[in-house]
Image (cartoon, rainbow, N blue to C red; front, top):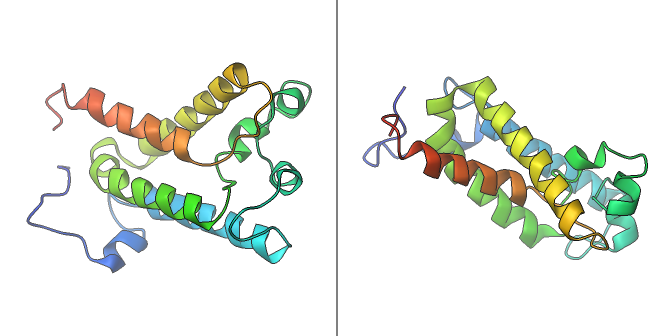
Length: 156
């Protein structure tokens, strides 16, 4: 499968509905959105949730994660620090997903996304021991890095 051609622009429906070679990206978008909505409905501030709220929903903090909460390495990839943070991340995810998922395939795309997110969370925990980190940015930047690496191959 070839990446989306510029003259074959996807409609909003195509971007938001899982189908064919573009299945995982919309699901990741909905998982991130669902997590955000549940956080807001449960009382987190919609624009700037406080640290306690972020940590209770699974944000990454070295002393918690390294102690016994390794699950935070993954959960923090779905917790966002407000609506603006979520919207920018989901825009970037939609864009890279349209280019990369059709080339990699569903399961390889999902594996690369999750591994990039866990690696980014681990890196954040290692270098920023007192920082609460959250968001899909690390996973998304990992996908952009993979895209750049694949540009050196015959896939693109």
